Image 1 (tube, helix red, strand yellow):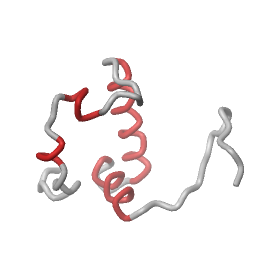
Image 2 (cartoon, helix red, strand yellow):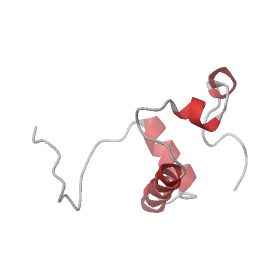
Image 3 (cartoon, helix red, strand yellow):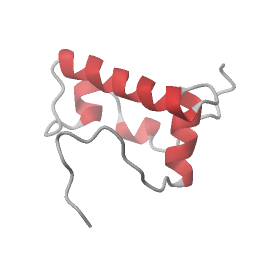
Length: 78
């Protein structure tokens, strides 16, 4: 398998059911829009000071146990 390249403009990967659900929910049924929305969320987190070495739950100040059982897409929100 080839290593990632910085100049990559397209990539293909098999999504798990959970990943597909996340992207579909983020994009209101459109995986491409969901992917862009997830990237936008990460960009906002980055500007706020989040870095990959930081635990995201700690950064956001949320209890991991409270969100552990939540399933994306089960809130009924549009």
